[in-house]
Image 1 (cartoon, protein in one colour):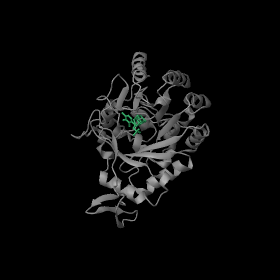
Image 2 (cartoon, protein in one colour; image 1 turned 60 degrees about the vertical axis):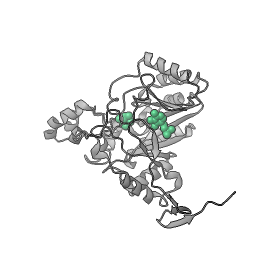
Image 3 (tube, protein in one colour; image 1 turned 90 degrees about the vertical axis):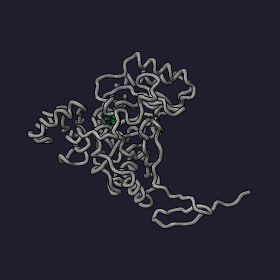
Image 4 (spheres, rainbow, N blue to C red; image 1 turned 120 degrees about the vertical axis):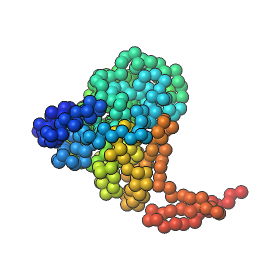
Length: 345
Ligand SMILES: *Cc1c(COP(=O)(O)O)cnc(C)c1O
Ligand code: SF4
């Protein structure tokens, strides 16, 4: 039996996930950042401090706002030509089609933009589609939110048809957590909606193997068998997945389910999330431990979205250093080797 979704502190208290004496101090947290734990994730929680619970249960630590934390950590608004649309790189845009999610992750990099009900207003969608149609450099449209798969298959089909009518848009990419946190939404109708366009990619946000329930595995299988390439993005989270063994298990689980790990994100500077953030040095050490120990197809790129909207870049670890007469290369076990480019002149 699936348990119900949880959205109120009173429900968290009633289920025993939050002690009654904490309800009062958590009220301002819930006021600042909405709570939602989907039925699937509620059912998958085995203890109130396990890796799933810690991602979704409100914590008074969220009220600690550090000076470096930002309202718009990755500059979504700075690079927004029309509401809901962000155009940072020439060839691709992200379009936030809704502000709703099936779960509200406590470390969400868009936590100040998500949580309201409803899809992007029709006038804003119209303006975004007009901008895309008028900008031939845009080759790829990334649908995000919120979570685009909270929209109905009927709504998504209509949106896909409008995007398909723009000849220079060749790729549509969905950024979503739904196949894992709410796999029942991946119905044949939903899959048909995603395929309404020849080249659809789906990038799954997932952070721990415990999230990949049997129902999630079925949803991923159905998506893969429909011919939709599946990639993943994971946020490096202190106390949840910040060690090589946990990430190795997650990435092996993803590969087994035909999902290719794409990005490991350094945790963005969203307000009230410092208790989740590791150092970059810690992330580099984990990535170095994974190289050689895990199949290359299971190794994502470790990236930082540079605060202020400067885009994402790989942040190592580095294996190449410039030396006096060539390079010093570090191998996967830490050994160092001189390398010289062959002289072709
Ligand atoms: C993350 C992001 C993308 C996608 O970047 P990729 O490196 O192609 O995955 C595109 N536009 C914006 C504004 C982004 O934040
Ligand atoms: S599913 Fe994505 S957009 Fe929604 S709360 Fe989690 S990280 Fe934020």
